[in-house]
View 1 (cartoon, helix red, strand yellow):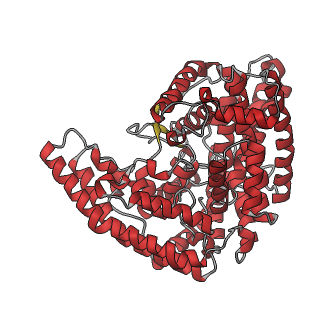
View 2 (cartoon, rainbow, N blue to C red; view 1 turned 180 degrees about the vertical axis):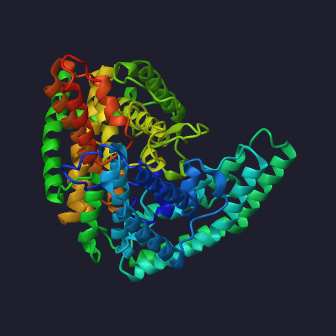
View 3 (spheres, rainbow, N blue to C red; view 1 turned 30 degrees about the vertical axis):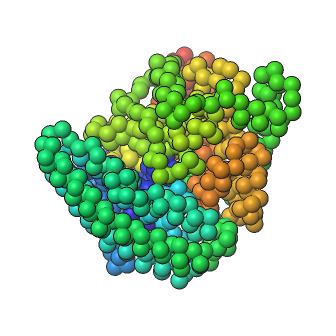
Length: 612
């Protein structure tokens, strides 16, 4: 979702398990295929000029997008929201164009190798942001199937620290400022509606359900949740007073603003909404989709090429799933096997609490196995918790990165409400994806790379981050996972799920598929339930192109591993290969490939040496 206004980046990152924002967003870098070599003697003045630009933009991103600052652990702006009035948005757009010109003024040939990569990445981000300034209608669509401006209040407050009275006062100030923020968003949505850009009716229906979950009694609303656990240093009487103020603000300020938003969505916005929502149906939508495909995959692949990749992978994975079925000893038909896996009580936990405990047990089995595959592990801890109930049983599990200051761990947010629909045999591969060795290991390792500029440590390229997480699932056998045929089937089903996305996302937005056709295809190929697949299809409608990144990224990482193994032979070291993938922080796939090629060349330059 980085192409939408960065003010909503925090909501987008929770929705996608990604970390996207103005200062760190999913980007596409189209650097030269054969970039010039680093300067023999880098120019210190040129490097200082470059890093001054990085620092200035990092600071501006915190000031301009306070929600993003809160998420990354910068607490200075925890009392406010992004100013999304047209004048403020125009000023930010002008600043982006100015930053692009400043970056273009840097002499790349005078920089060292790391700074050259950093410059390439910063240039692309600015170029991409300038390019998306032309997509005014698309930028206005901040109501998503999973999250968006309608859930911003509850989501952002969860990241406000509440250990001291001063911190709680900032939460209260942010709460009080929410009506102005939400009312401005209604105006922006109206402008998008005028331009012909309104999300589809199914997406808006999901937003209404989420809003209803916030518009309950103030003390039961998720908006109040962050105020329930205040720091022990705050005296009990003061805690009570702070909570009373929060409840009053929710009842008299926040919820009335949310009701105004709900009335607008249910009324004129819904009336203007298309039934389907494919980008091809919007003014200039094909151009927008082309930009999103390039951005999310960080490749030059076309929708047609990605669609065919998906069809090929779906066929391959279906054969593998059928082999596992036969290997399990099951003698019935495919349909009956799927019914058995999805209905037999032995495959399900008895309660949300039991499911959460199951996820935690899997993680604890993985942790001690990680040194087999990684030379260095991050210090940042992670936890596993349930997603907020108001998001509903159809919401996807997510990962949220911890802060660089170490005050907040990484969190795998599991959908335990769906314990009746998500079998036990799906859980191992999900932990590998969302926690370790997936998102948490990659994200925490990136944050700890202190030699890199802050924007690189905090960046999230969808193809890299989700590609890594999907690749991490394939490491399961080496970590002791998928020991029984049902968990192996669950792993293949998860891979099939991402492969089918290639077909469906491109089908919806570039090939004229209807929502009904997309839903039928997802159910048929993934063998998943209809409710969760409907939520997924609506996700693809409201976040075009994002779902393509998973399998495209994974396939590139697998290809790089195969290339390194074939080139290095017995000098290939899987632990060092993984550090090469992780230790330069998130990056586009073409830049990643050059990093791996350089590592292969270094190993080859020292015959007989292991892959270090």
